[in-house]
Amino acid sequence: MENSFLPDDFGHNVGYPVSSIGKIKKIVFYAVGLIVFLSLFYFLFLSAPGNFPLGTVVKIEPGMSLHSVSSVLKKQHIIRSRVAFEILVIIWGGEKHTISADYLFENKLSVFEVARRISEGEHYMAPVAVTIPEGFDANQIGDTAALELANFNKAKFLLAVRDKEGYLFPDTYFFFSNANETDVIKSMSDNFEKKISPLLPEIISSGQTEKDIVIMASIIEREAKGEIDRGVISGILWKRISIGMPLQADSAPETYKVKGLPERPIGNPGLEAIKVAIHPQDSPYFYYLHDKNGNIHYARNFTEHSKNVVKYLKQ
Image (cartoon, rainbow, N blue to C red; front, side):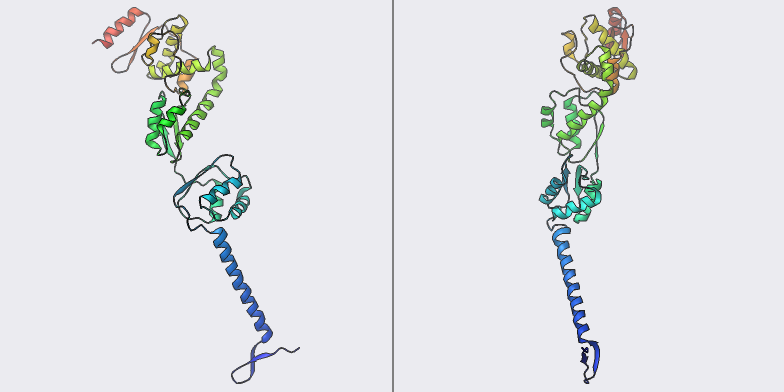
């Protein structure tokens, strides 16, 4: 069959065959349809939701499944389509490759970018440094953390750590800005276990319990002024216990009335105080005192100690 042509204004057959025009119209139709479909698909599944919560922080907990993560993001209006997110995460790093962290979404993001960030752990949260000095008790730790962390509740913290005094390891910690008292307790408790674990064989060899070592270390931390003093004071205090003499430690007033160690730690000791509690330094001294400037003066017996009291404290 011959192709027919469209006539021009003068009746001449020019231009494309009618069948070709039909084909072009079909191509244009399908192209426009594809563009519309892709646009709708992107809008409905891949683009950021219109109510994307700018500046929000989403917490991805350790051990959360990909399905659970997508559910959280959907409820928070971070993504439109859970299916699209889960497929993209699997493409980026495997089904189980979602990294737990607190994620800050400061701008609207497509599901592509959300999936990539959670797969690679790009949380964009600047850490807040919280330094807990050696010897701080729970109350002091609570005050320090409350100053740095807006979501930290000191009252809840103190209630939760009633039996953890001595087992909150002093150190510099880096928390997300939205960290709360639970995060602080976990970090400090885990750090204590990490630090004490290698010392357990030495504690057993010392003949003391871990509890007694931690209690003694907490007293040493408060009584000593520096590295050298820690070891000597540890030796003095353990000697007093061995002969049934009261500890008479100013940092633990009850030790003037009751022999032996207090019932619980008086603060949270650092690693060096724990080590010298395990390995006390031998010396000829039984007494020591702090002068008005905090310097320590030792004495072999009560007579020498009395002279030091007159010399350094009664001037």
